[in-house]
Image (tube, rainbow, N blue to C red; front, side, top):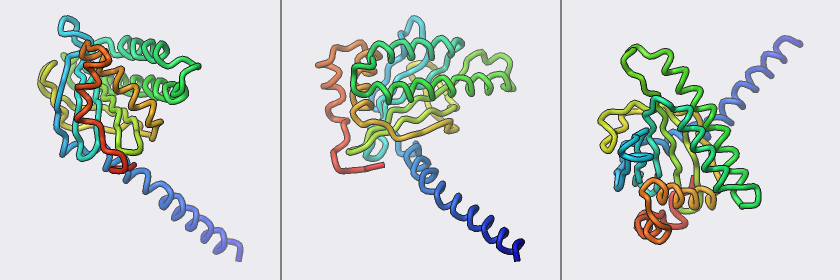
Length: 211
């Protein structure tokens, strides 16, 4: 009697585990689908003199996606620079600090995965490491996604042909919205008023496209 009972318990556990994991996987798969992407604005980052990637403002159905495509020979340094900016902009005293901590932790893990992929590359002449960072804003929710991208084109005209998700998670909407504004200011070298005007027609409508 014990053996059939244990088998039933095992089958039940497998079914419950699959059922619990499926919605999250499906939700983020749809969220990261790029087929409808429209790149509205783009800027080489941090500058055209020392390009390490490209910042893109993207319409994805009813979402606003602020995507940084990194293609850098010094990806670990770039990650450290992002970490330093996040620490300055989101101290413990500011609401959104914990969301920033989560982002920085996941970013360092994603950089390591990019390095692993770089060491396994088949083209030894390719000296850059690649990473995609997406801040995704819906009407009433927000998420952050880190992926290993396949890119074509050069800085200023990079095209994302595919990407392999490393990690994606729901985040504080206030943190994502405010960080989008600060990222746009920094990447496009704008003041807050001009950056707000650039983003004004792209902000999602509240009450639509919840995650």
